[in-house]
Length: 159
Picture 1 (cartoon, helix red, strand yellow):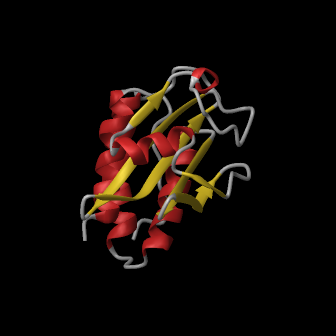
Picture 2 (cartoon, rainbow, N blue to C red):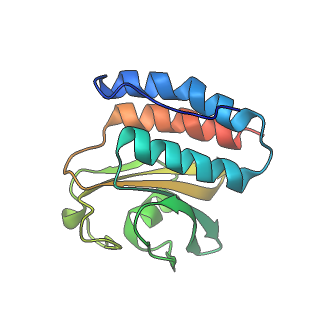
Picture 3 (cartoon, rainbow, N blue to C red):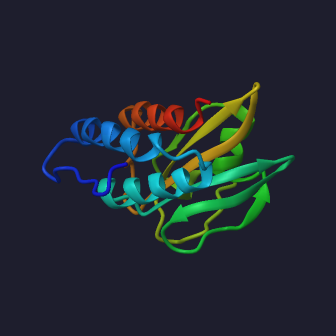
């Protein structure tokens, strides 16, 4: 297991993810407990990619329930009919929102969040979890984030 994870701050986003992937793989490969791995991945992403908030929501019937995260306190439970996370569950696709203030039905857990990316974890054709990441910057997320974050989710949920 990796004990120290670090990326060069001067690298491009793409290069940062490329440095992080093998370190995350090493971090989670020896641990069987999903919650422990989710917690470590949240910390790695928040502090190495400098995201405002990183967390997982578990899908339970028609609700999303807060699980492990890094950042300020978050919304604990809400309907899959609401918010960016709900849109992700309903579409079963990654949702990138450049400006959350323009997203109809956005749930403002923090007024400091300005852009968001949410990725689904699909198991047996159902969304079981979502990875939710917020930035205090507008238009912060793109297809580079979507690609590498999906790779990280595959490491965590490919059992």
